[in-house]
Length: 283
Image (cartoon, rainbow, N blue to C red; front, side, top):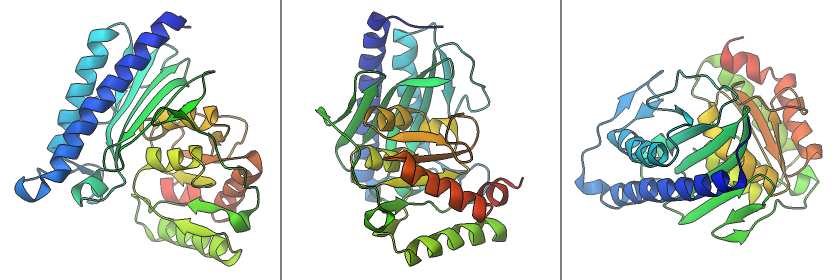
Protein backbone atom coordinates (compact mmCIF):
# COMPACT_ATOMS: atom_id res chain seq x y z
CA UNK A 1 0.00 0.00 0.00
CA UNK A 2 1.38 3.41 -0.95
CA UNK A 3 0.42 6.93 0.00
CA UNK A 4 0.47 9.98 -2.26
CA UNK A 5 2.90 12.88 -2.02
CA UNK A 6 0.04 15.06 -0.84
CA UNK A 7 -0.75 12.62 1.97
CA UNK A 8 2.92 12.49 2.86
CA UNK A 9 3.10 16.28 3.05
CA UNK A 10 0.19 16.25 5.49
CA UNK A 11 1.83 13.50 7.53
CA UNK A 12 5.09 15.46 7.82
CA UNK A 13 3.29 18.51 9.16
CA UNK A 14 1.35 16.39 11.65
CA UNK A 15 4.49 14.64 12.89
CA UNK A 16 6.40 17.91 13.29
CA UNK A 17 3.50 19.52 15.14
CA UNK A 18 2.99 16.53 17.43
CA UNK A 19 6.71 16.31 18.20
CA UNK A 20 6.83 20.02 19.02
CA UNK A 21 3.90 19.75 21.44
CA UNK A 22 5.40 16.74 23.22
CA UNK A 23 8.88 18.28 23.33
CA UNK A 24 7.43 21.40 24.94
CA UNK A 25 5.86 19.26 27.67
CA UNK A 26 9.17 17.50 28.30
CA UNK A 27 11.14 20.76 28.35
CA UNK A 28 8.73 22.36 30.82
CA UNK A 29 8.76 19.31 33.09
CA UNK A 30 12.56 19.18 33.09
CA UNK A 31 12.91 22.91 33.71
CA UNK A 32 10.53 22.68 36.67
CA UNK A 33 11.69 19.25 37.86
CA UNK A 34 12.64 20.53 41.33
CA UNK A 35 9.04 21.61 41.90
CA UNK A 36 7.11 18.64 40.51
CA UNK A 37 6.44 15.16 41.78
CA UNK A 38 7.20 12.49 39.21
CA UNK A 39 4.87 9.51 39.21
CA UNK A 40 7.42 6.83 38.32
CA UNK A 41 6.38 3.25 37.60
CA UNK A 42 8.25 0.26 36.23
CA UNK A 43 7.38 -1.94 33.27
CA UNK A 44 9.42 -5.02 32.37
CA UNK A 45 11.80 -4.59 35.32
CA UNK A 46 13.13 -2.07 37.84
CA UNK A 47 15.19 -0.15 35.27
CA UNK A 48 12.42 0.10 32.63
CA UNK A 49 10.56 3.23 33.71
CA UNK A 50 7.41 5.10 32.74
CA UNK A 51 6.14 8.43 34.11
CA UNK A 52 2.97 10.48 33.88
CA UNK A 53 4.75 12.58 31.25
CA UNK A 54 5.27 9.59 28.96
CA UNK A 55 1.51 9.11 29.05
CA UNK A 56 0.68 12.81 28.70
CA UNK A 57 3.02 13.22 25.73
CA UNK A 58 1.60 10.11 24.10
CA UNK A 59 -1.98 11.37 24.51
CA UNK A 60 -1.11 14.72 22.92
CA UNK A 61 0.76 13.09 20.04
CA UNK A 62 -1.93 10.53 19.28
CA UNK A 63 -4.69 13.14 19.38
CA UNK A 64 -2.92 15.16 16.69
CA UNK A 65 -2.09 12.14 14.54
CA UNK A 66 -5.56 10.59 14.82
CA UNK A 67 -7.28 13.86 13.98
CA UNK A 68 -5.22 14.36 10.83
CA UNK A 69 -4.98 10.74 9.68
CA UNK A 70 -7.78 8.70 11.25
CA UNK A 71 -7.27 5.95 8.65
CA UNK A 72 -3.72 5.11 9.79
CA UNK A 73 -2.85 2.44 12.34
CA UNK A 74 -0.85 3.25 15.49
CA UNK A 75 1.96 1.42 17.28
CA UNK A 76 2.96 3.35 20.40
CA UNK A 77 5.09 2.40 23.39
CA UNK A 78 2.78 3.22 26.29
CA UNK A 79 -0.67 2.34 24.92
CA UNK A 80 -0.40 0.24 21.78
CA UNK A 81 2.83 -1.66 22.38
CA UNK A 82 1.28 -5.07 21.71
CA UNK A 83 0.03 -4.15 18.23
CA UNK A 84 1.96 -5.70 15.35
CA UNK A 85 3.06 -4.03 12.14
CA UNK A 86 0.98 -4.64 9.03
CA UNK A 87 1.52 -3.27 5.52
CA UNK A 88 -0.94 -0.45 6.23
CA UNK A 89 0.36 3.07 6.97
CA UNK A 90 1.19 3.01 10.68
CA UNK A 91 2.35 5.70 13.04
CA UNK A 92 5.11 4.35 15.28
CA UNK A 93 5.54 6.54 18.36
CA UNK A 94 7.83 6.78 21.36
CA UNK A 95 6.59 9.76 23.41
CA UNK A 96 9.79 9.88 25.50
CA UNK A 97 12.70 7.81 24.29
CA UNK A 98 15.14 7.85 27.18
CA UNK A 99 12.72 7.99 30.11
CA UNK A 100 15.46 7.19 32.64
CA UNK A 101 17.48 10.18 31.41
CA UNK A 102 14.35 12.32 31.59
CA UNK A 103 13.74 11.23 35.19
CA UNK A 104 17.30 12.17 36.16
CA UNK A 105 17.32 15.48 34.28
CA UNK A 106 19.85 14.39 31.66
CA UNK A 107 19.98 15.70 28.09
CA UNK A 108 19.56 12.43 26.20
CA UNK A 109 15.82 12.03 25.85
CA UNK A 110 13.62 12.82 22.88
CA UNK A 111 10.30 12.42 21.09
CA UNK A 112 10.29 9.93 18.22
CA UNK A 113 7.53 9.74 15.59
CA UNK A 114 7.66 7.64 12.41
CA UNK A 115 5.30 6.76 9.61
CA UNK A 116 5.82 3.19 8.42
CA UNK A 117 4.30 1.78 5.22
CA UNK A 118 4.66 -1.88 4.23
CA UNK A 119 6.83 -2.27 7.35
CA UNK A 120 9.36 0.29 6.04
CA UNK A 121 9.88 3.74 7.64
CA UNK A 122 9.14 6.48 5.12
CA UNK A 123 8.99 9.48 7.45
CA UNK A 124 10.67 10.28 10.73
CA UNK A 125 10.81 13.13 13.24
CA UNK A 126 13.01 13.14 16.34
CA UNK A 127 12.92 16.12 18.71
CA UNK A 128 15.40 16.49 21.59
CA UNK A 129 14.08 19.33 23.77
CA UNK A 130 17.08 19.70 26.09
CA UNK A 131 19.38 20.06 23.10
CA UNK A 132 16.90 22.15 21.10
CA UNK A 133 17.48 19.82 18.18
CA UNK A 134 14.93 18.55 15.67
CA UNK A 135 15.78 15.90 13.08
CA UNK A 136 13.46 14.94 10.24
CA UNK A 137 13.44 12.98 7.02
CA UNK A 138 11.10 11.75 4.31
CA UNK A 139 12.11 8.96 1.97
CA UNK A 140 13.71 10.42 -1.14
CA UNK A 141 13.79 13.97 0.23
CA UNK A 142 16.91 13.97 2.39
CA UNK A 143 17.52 14.33 6.13
CA UNK A 144 17.36 17.59 8.05
CA UNK A 145 18.81 18.84 11.33
CA UNK A 146 17.14 22.02 12.61
CA UNK A 147 15.97 22.79 9.09
CA UNK A 148 19.34 22.26 7.38
CA UNK A 149 20.40 19.25 5.32
CA UNK A 150 22.51 16.83 7.33
CA UNK A 151 24.82 14.00 6.33
CA UNK A 152 26.75 11.18 7.96
CA UNK A 153 30.49 11.60 8.42
CA UNK A 154 32.99 10.38 5.84
CA UNK A 155 35.20 8.57 8.36
CA UNK A 156 35.81 4.92 7.49
CA UNK A 157 38.52 3.88 9.93
CA UNK A 158 37.54 2.57 13.36
CA UNK A 159 40.52 4.37 14.88
CA UNK A 160 38.91 7.72 14.06
CA UNK A 161 35.32 6.71 14.81
CA UNK A 162 32.98 7.34 17.73
CA UNK A 163 31.07 4.18 18.64
CA UNK A 164 27.85 4.27 20.67
CA UNK A 165 26.69 1.42 22.90
CA UNK A 166 23.89 1.26 25.46
CA UNK A 167 23.57 -0.53 28.77
CA UNK A 168 20.87 -3.12 28.18
CA UNK A 169 17.66 -3.25 30.17
CA UNK A 170 18.54 -6.92 30.65
CA UNK A 171 21.08 -6.87 33.51
CA UNK A 172 21.71 -10.62 33.60
CA UNK A 173 25.35 -11.69 33.92
CA UNK A 174 25.59 -13.02 30.32
CA UNK A 175 24.11 -9.81 28.89
CA UNK A 176 26.37 -7.53 30.94
CA UNK A 177 29.45 -9.65 30.19
CA UNK A 178 28.73 -9.54 26.46
CA UNK A 179 28.42 -5.75 26.47
CA UNK A 180 31.58 -5.24 28.52
CA UNK A 181 33.53 -7.59 26.24
CA UNK A 182 32.53 -5.57 23.18
CA UNK A 183 33.41 -2.29 24.89
CA UNK A 184 36.80 -3.69 25.87
CA UNK A 185 37.60 -4.83 22.34
CA UNK A 186 36.58 -1.47 20.89
CA UNK A 187 38.68 0.38 23.47
CA UNK A 188 41.71 -1.76 22.65
CA UNK A 189 41.55 -1.17 18.88
CA UNK A 190 41.43 1.71 19.90
CA UNK A 191 38.41 3.49 18.44
CA UNK A 192 38.45 7.25 18.89
CA UNK A 193 35.79 7.01 21.62
CA UNK A 194 33.08 4.76 23.02
CA UNK A 195 30.04 6.58 24.38
CA UNK A 196 27.05 5.32 26.36
CA UNK A 197 23.86 7.40 26.27
CA UNK A 198 20.20 6.70 27.01
CA UNK A 199 18.18 7.25 23.83
CA UNK A 200 18.37 5.00 20.78
CA UNK A 201 16.62 7.50 18.53
CA UNK A 202 18.89 10.36 19.55
CA UNK A 203 22.08 8.32 19.19
CA UNK A 204 21.00 7.28 15.70
CA UNK A 205 20.53 10.96 14.90
CA UNK A 206 24.08 11.60 16.14
CA UNK A 207 25.19 9.16 13.45
CA UNK A 208 22.97 10.91 10.90
CA UNK A 209 24.49 14.29 11.73
CA UNK A 210 28.09 13.08 11.56
CA UNK A 211 28.84 13.21 15.29
CA UNK A 212 29.24 9.45 15.64
CA UNK A 213 30.00 6.68 13.17
CA UNK A 214 28.61 3.42 14.58
CA UNK A 215 25.83 2.44 16.96
CA UNK A 216 24.33 -0.99 17.52
CA UNK A 217 22.02 -2.41 20.15
CA UNK A 218 19.95 -5.45 21.07
CA UNK A 219 16.81 -5.21 23.16
CA UNK A 220 15.25 -2.20 21.46
CA UNK A 221 11.73 -1.96 20.01
CA UNK A 222 10.26 -0.61 16.78
CA UNK A 223 9.28 2.70 18.40
CA UNK A 224 12.89 3.27 19.50
CA UNK A 225 14.37 3.14 16.01
CA UNK A 226 11.68 3.62 13.34
CA UNK A 227 11.88 7.41 13.00
CA UNK A 228 15.66 7.63 13.23
CA UNK A 229 16.11 4.78 10.72
CA UNK A 230 14.80 6.85 7.83
CA UNK A 231 16.76 9.88 9.09
CA UNK A 232 20.04 7.92 9.04
CA UNK A 233 19.33 6.45 5.62
CA UNK A 234 18.40 9.80 4.10
CA UNK A 235 21.61 11.25 5.59
CA UNK A 236 23.59 8.64 3.64
CA UNK A 237 24.03 6.01 6.34
CA UNK A 238 22.89 2.42 6.74
CA UNK A 239 20.49 0.75 9.18
CA UNK A 240 19.93 -3.00 9.28
CA UNK A 241 19.36 -5.99 11.54
CA UNK A 242 22.09 -6.84 14.04
CA UNK A 243 22.71 -10.13 12.24
CA UNK A 244 21.89 -9.27 8.62
CA UNK A 245 23.29 -6.29 6.72
CA UNK A 246 20.78 -6.79 3.90
CA UNK A 247 17.52 -6.13 5.75
CA UNK A 248 15.80 -4.21 8.53
CA UNK A 249 12.97 -5.79 10.49
CA UNK A 250 11.71 -3.18 12.94
CA UNK A 251 10.30 -5.93 15.16
CA UNK A 252 13.52 -7.95 15.39
CA UNK A 253 14.78 -6.33 18.66
CA UNK A 254 18.34 -5.86 17.36
CA UNK A 255 19.82 -3.41 14.87
CA UNK A 256 23.01 -1.76 13.65
CA UNK A 257 23.37 1.75 12.28
CA UNK A 258 26.46 3.39 10.83
CA UNK A 259 27.75 5.94 8.39
CA UNK A 260 28.81 3.11 6.06
CA UNK A 261 28.45 -0.59 5.45
CA UNK A 262 32.16 -1.02 6.22
CA UNK A 263 31.66 0.14 9.81
CA UNK A 264 28.24 -1.44 10.32
CA UNK A 265 29.78 -4.84 9.60
CA UNK A 266 31.95 -4.31 12.68
CA UNK A 267 28.76 -4.22 14.75
CA UNK A 268 27.62 -7.51 13.24
CA UNK A 269 31.00 -9.13 13.82
CA UNK A 270 31.24 -8.05 17.47
CA UNK A 271 27.64 -9.06 18.14
CA UNK A 272 28.25 -12.52 16.73
CA UNK A 273 31.60 -12.94 18.47
CA UNK A 274 30.25 -12.15 21.94
CA UNK A 275 26.74 -13.58 21.44
CA UNK A 276 25.22 -10.18 22.10
CA UNK A 277 21.77 -10.99 20.76
CA UNK A 278 21.51 -14.40 22.42
CA UNK A 279 22.66 -13.17 25.83
CA UNK A 280 20.47 -10.06 25.82
CA UNK A 281 17.27 -11.63 24.52
CA UNK A 282 17.82 -14.96 26.25
CA UNK A 283 17.74 -16.90 23.00
